[in-house]
Amino acid sequence: MVLKGKVWKFGDDISTDHIAPGRYFHLRTNLPELAKHVLEDAREDFASKVQPGDMIVAGRNFGLGSSREHAPRIIKLAGVSCVIAKSFARIFYRNSINVGLPLVEIKETDEIDEGDELEVDLQAGIVKNLTKGKEYRFTPMPAFMLKIIEEGGIEEYIKKYGDYQL
Image 1 (cartoon, rainbow, N blue to C red):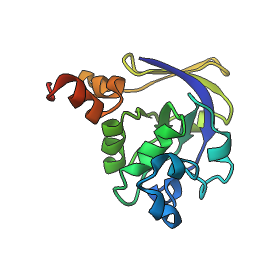
Image 2: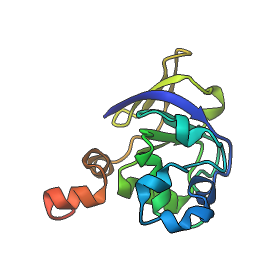
Image 3: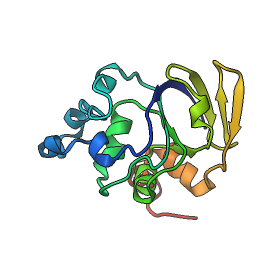
Image 4: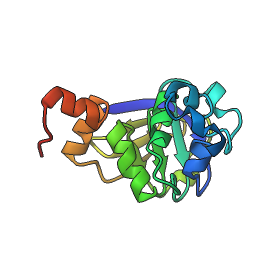
């Protein structure tokens, strides 16, 4: 599974409150509408300018805070193909896999700039910065997690296969 996209850059400690602002709590049953406000507390113009396939690159502890499952869902609904960070909050990581949003951990996110074009090979564990000609390695996701991502999340996986198989 290879993804390609343009980078949107964020810093450390982007919380689920940044991703899905609490003042829009009433929209949690209307995720497409909530996605119009994704990350607006971290970057006001993000939701209106993000394009399908774009990627988020961030620092440490992306997704900290509450266990809002709709946070990774609205990132995915906004068209983001992948989030790359130095580290992720544990529950955000699992929620993202469950909804089919791939996450990649690399230490070198400071070397990636806003607007760079990236290619991410989830199976091989390689991030290529096509703009700068650099390559970064990460531990590939286990095959069962990749399968969940490929199917669009755990719900779609179970609909297709009827059960979860390792």
